[in-house]
Image (cartoon, rainbow, N blue to C red; front, side, top):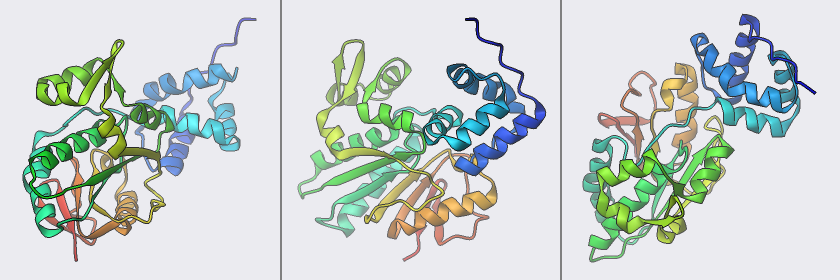
Length: 276
């Protein structure tokens, strides 16, 4: 049987989708992204043999499994290894030596709070492994990567990469590529040492992370730009709860916390510290 064509996304339904995306994820999608929304959601309508977006929204609101699929479809996931060079220079050359000097014997706890497909978390792991190799004293670490999308968390956990991601890290550091990746078929999988130190879980930034750990440094990059000022405050509030006194927060290049009046003090562009 030939499936019926999907109705166009009306302005009214567009507003309903945008409103629901915001209530579910905190992300504010502008109305000019209508084509993108249709492109991402239409496969789910076809899967359920639905022809209208209003019917699909009713399904999402009543079906927790479809809610997961909906979130997977509407969230943006774009990243690469060692994105923004100065962030990694700070982490390797300033933060790690300072942390070890001030906390000898303590395990470093790192949170990649918008982990996407895992490149940031594994980049952190590579930096820590290389720092560890250079030390005469003991140094240990653990990295937690979280994201609202279960789809990208599954990809991150697999540690398998190909295409542009692999080309990118080859260009940035062929040495690290050779040491931390193993070829499996037409893909490359991160080394077992990294996968033993870097773990992933789904998490909504509008909730407080369910973990007893307090983190020494949190990466939350290129996410706050999708939130309103009020929602940014909510997210930062939840992050601060899980940051140790004096812990560092790293944000994205287009992001600033200067107007949020938080417990964080400005250290340098992109870098904030939780007041002790």
